[in-house]
Length: 172
Image 1 (spheres, rainbow, N blue to C red):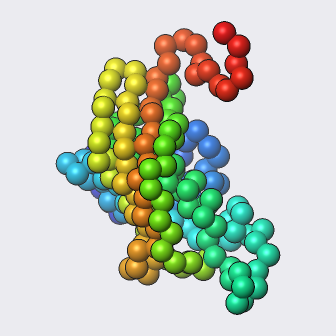
Image 2 (spheres, helix red, strand yellow):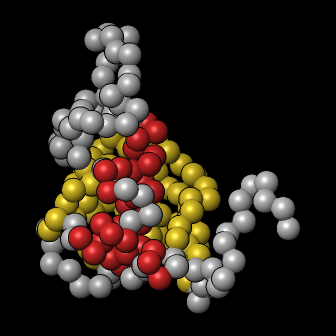
């Protein structure tokens, strides 16, 4: 899907999210590179930030910082951005993604809220089928030009025919 970047996310994309847009955590698409299977986006780090805003902080023992769990959620959102803009998958057409493995997660430094952050997601391995895709992603986050997170994760994208994806504890 050709899109001229940088740009804000359009309403069509926001309407297709499987989450409320308030937890997208990204406000600007910086790059879509289909040839390299890569997307880059700007992360919003001003308040309100789930988990980060609930930290009990101390300037020495526990300074205010972007919560690691928030970064992991942001990696999933980058995966959705990749699926939408690079693979052309649409949630409204039945496609949905689920993270399956965190192969590597390295937090290199604490980043205070309000810092300019860019996230990059690149598919490094793909098995694409008619109704099921397995993708391994490389995820990189930089704050003010310095890497603060890098990881590799896998996800499965499904387009179920008629029955919903079984959840843990579902019978039959």
